[in-house]
Image (cartoon, rainbow, N blue to C red; front, top):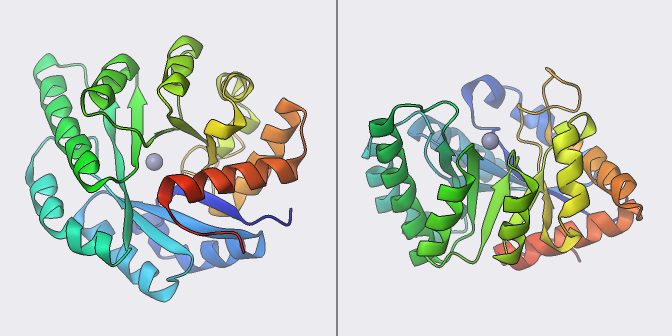
Length: 259
Ligand SMILES: [Zn+2]
């Protein structure tokens, strides 16, 4: 593939990945990945993410969010104070990952807290006009209605695990789907790729989650096999998948990737 690729979602700042992040970035660049958006969800990850950003300023950008297991307002309060500066320096280019996971959070009081925190972040994304990268599991109707409530135009549903009907609704709302390496084995992800138009798709590795082989880790260079798999499913050229997904990223993030 000649067209440069983008990995829109990777956890390279997590302590267990950070120590080999440089190796992973080098491997990605060798596979024609030109940009990696690193998700940071706590203060330690922000520190690590900024180190990677300083070292690889044309490749690494950050998205800023909060862990879904963090039911406090502290992270939001800290990050919302510093985010305007990080946005103007282009260190942070998106909000995320944030979201709702009802398969992990069963208690109603905790779900209410999670929704309130999610809404704060969504409101911030709207205010700063940033794309929002959303994780959800068993909570897509709540996620979509909150995004609608704040008139969000630029949303990426990462590693979408919901049904086809809600996926169609999200496409109608103008949202994007980032497809992870697990599309190699997941029938649900393959059906998603069949359903969603290429104009609403991005590539992601979700490093180190959702590898191409069940139970194995992923890495940013895997976006290349994701592009090839999407091409196979849709019966089109992999070069077209690379071009359209990278173009989608350029429009959504207002960043130039292709020469
Ligand atoms: Zn993730």
